[in-house]
Length: 507
Image (cartoon, rainbow, N blue to C red; front, side):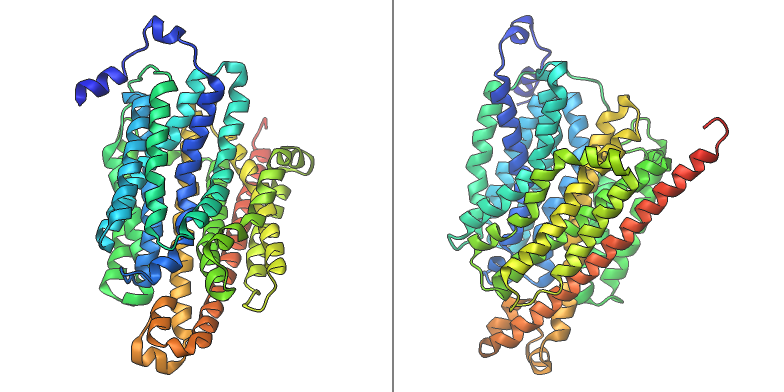
């Protein structure tokens, strides 16, 4: 196996270098890989109601872990995944990532219990972290310099298309009735993409880029501990030993990670970078936008299915109004930012995202879908304004020789914000749902999910759904306000740093 991996990643010979590569086919294959790993982040949210009523009988916190395990592993390992590609060969690591993705999806599809399902989700996340950065690295090695800008723009747009594909494709697959089909369908797709990558992707030279395994391990451990504290609170109690230990371990592990990264010669992510005010505020902004967007994804699937009575395919199609502005407006945002300024652009972006989420929180079971879709459009406009502006701010805060660090930071903050959004709204949803249930249902059965409540009190479906809709309103309202507050902090930091620069002599 070692020899095979070594041969696959050797320096290219003149024959290999001269072999024509179909750039159009290569671009399509790499973009399909991105759509697969990003689409899985969105698609799993559609399966939450089906999983809740499945034979696994997951608790409310377990449902959040089923969604978040993939996302948090993906977020924490995407930078090491890029470093591994530089060191061991981008094509080889990309193929390994697709193989791990297929293996994890297969294990998830066959999992007889929650523990193996979570293990499968973690393996799939490791695979995704190896796939995402190396698709871009393979492309940039293969295309001429003059086409790199257009190639990067096309590749980046796949994250938005991946969300659409995950919702629509996931809805179509899940309409078969079993959550297992979602994971089973990913296996042949990953295998097919691996075969295409093996056939058409060029082999690029390896670079002696060190990997920081201790930093990666500490970051994953700290992130998981933080999510334990957030997710387990409603069921275990906020003063329980588990929750307090989770928050305590997160603080210790994040401190240890910072210490290690400051001392190691080749850090996973140098904490000193966050001394740059522009980078710090842009990363916070990116985290806030994805916090709001994926909190919405998590609750939207259940709200449309439970509250509005939509089928799973119609639910997948129901999120499309959010993505329309992202696809149509993204290429025009640069001109808008140059005309009105970055700060005003971001103020509008956070206002639309936060305001859209608060608007969605006013929807109930009787609200027409068109009114709900209008608030999705408002939120989508905010996301469309935010993503290119924040991406440019992150890239512009770093020198050109650290472009890879900027790309890794963008991926990490996006996925970390997504994981936090799911964890926080899942926690609020559980706590408020339990409080809103009739007292006798709480006392007799203590349900923490809609599926549990419906199973124990089938004659009181209307009261259970009303409690869930009430919890959804509270969750979206809380997340919307949080996005507005974080957006205000981002803009305040930007204004203060600009004012400080203006006061420096010679500025």
